[in-house]
Image (spheres, helix red, strand yellow):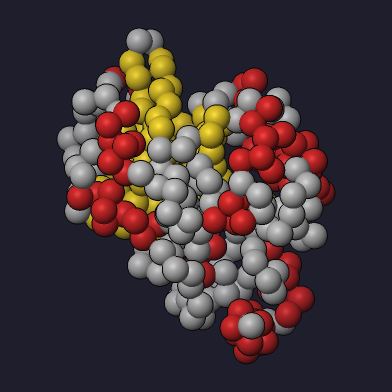
Length: 284
């Protein structure tokens, strides 16, 4: 209801309702060099693609997904990290199966659960995607290996549905080595940063606000996505990036908030560093 009211109010600012709907197809690829203290030299240049909030729907349908996949296939990555909300009031995984088909044969595809994933049936609904080879991280971790060095990726389960177990996750992590955290809701960053165990948290959930005033202010934001709802933050020494994501919730428009995918290129550094590589590339 609130999104609908704001959509009607902000459409003239965006130029027209038609333009705001067109914005849903202007995927922006944001790209960053990330400096990580203690990163082994063997992992210099490791690249992870971040996808989130795909929200398969009548708008983010098979045609839109396959257009995005064609763009992704042109990228050089070592893994794909998906921070939840694949679904939007749907249990049909066929379009998402086509989107992810054989990608896990090329590189690891890692997933944490979003609130909509649980609301739409949970792990049984997502099983066809897991059968494609996607790794689901429910308070668990995964290792990317290169030349004998390990890059640790931790996955915290959904906070909204109270499935998260930060203490248990920490117990499963090795005692040392840089660890990146995947979690759907960005505002858990305060608790995660306080552990001192993660150099970077990547999240989604908020859609970057989806419908924003000029300057990026978002009038409507979800619970656990109100503090760190968009872009880069440094929280108690831990870097945090909240991706605007691909899909939407109703009214299925975006205003001043283009869909986004993110590339992270990791490099050894003396202290945390997060640097844009170039202006975001727009794919229509």
